[in-house]
Image 1 (cartoon, helix red, strand yellow):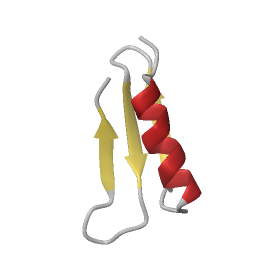
Image 2: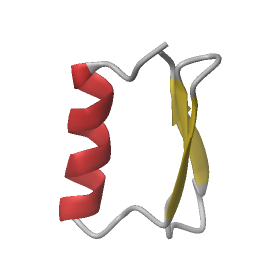
Image 3: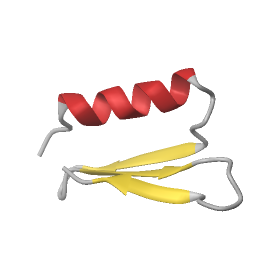
Length: 48
């Protein structure tokens, strides 16, 4: 499953704002797993 345009927009916005630490795309599920440099909310994902 490929990433959607909305997922790419979210990832690119986080990169532009300097808020994206690490990222991993799971091709089987279509999910992006991301890490951001915030103490209160460090991990998240966008569902494919």
